[in-house]
View 1 (cartoon, one colour):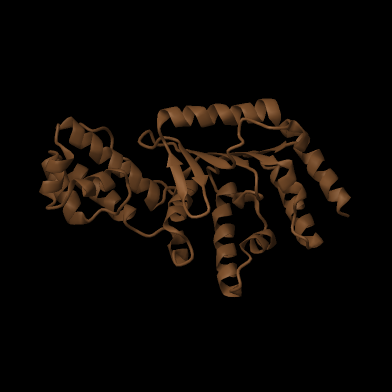
View 2 (view 1 turned 180 degrees about the vertical axis):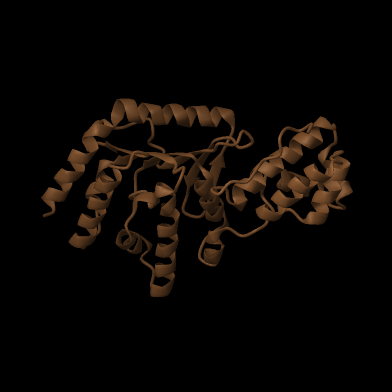
Length: 292
């Protein structure tokens, strides 16, 4: 087809990534036909803003809208149309995390969907043990909600997120740099603290996980702006994403200059400031011994 191969689904790809990838394909088709967003919006009896949201994967695809756009973009082959429509149906299905939407802000729902589809995850954490590495008891301590039921549901969701670490056949590669004070500032319950440290020690044995510790003696670093996560995807339609979480929202950066800056920053932290990965297990074991 003119716009390139239609993006194909896989077991790891949830609706968030399918929407973004499919939106990218529609944008390419529109641009190849030299059709403006306004004209595309008119074909849907909608606004230019709706076309923008569809192309960015920010909203689901109604079948009637897909039919109209494919006709406008000259996709006439029945098999090609059906592939597009089938993907649009899948992209509109709720992900497994949908059951927790009453507890999650919308900006974090997007992150979970992207995280589940990433094949590379790089983390710099200055406040807490990264969510993918937390034990259930540590998570429960962090959430600290008055409602025991809500806290348990959030813990359940976090544990479900972590299944990607041992996913078959293609778990993501995860490389994390964690500030030393995060590892030392553990919950007051000594059992929770020991279990969390022991869990991190076990994770260092997985071939797809690398953990480095940023020592307290390293002094100021170029990453004084705080924690961030970088996600990489196998699809050419999806650029890398830098995720910056804030108290009441989040930023998703995907511009080339931003990605280059954060990639260089992460490389610098790993190479010049953090302890080498091969020292992590001994360091965690020492922290465990100190708490015995």
